Image (cartoon, rainbow, N blue to C red; front, side, top):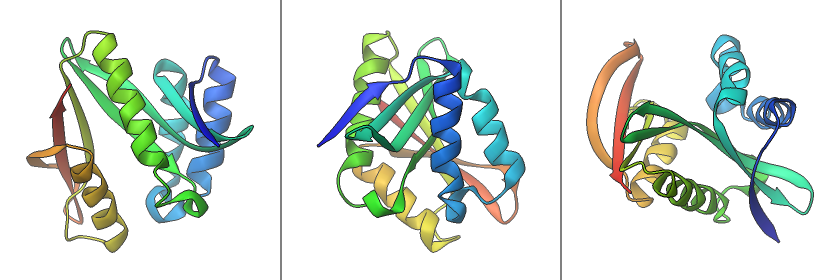
Length: 152
């Protein structure tokens, strides 16, 4: 049975974020970016999906404005894809963000049409009620940044 819990300590956040991101090289192969997510995780609210006692997915939220929180990083182990774990994590994150007084949630990913793995990611966020907001030249030409938003 999958349960979603908030991670409490900096060490726990970094250990779980590292464990899962390193298992997902298709999305997190750039070491500098991966290490930045791990380093910043203690500053964020992190929710984790557990299969028993084993962490199988997580997401971290960070404030980007008085009314807006960003789903800053998320990962679910490949063996657990397509089992509703991402949906559970996003639902829990929306509930937590709303309870904290935020009105909007945003997420950034690589624009649809660039890479098949990221196309799956885009479709996932769309299925969770996020809507296209804008595309920014935030990263580089090969990785245009798609921003999605949803009202909470």
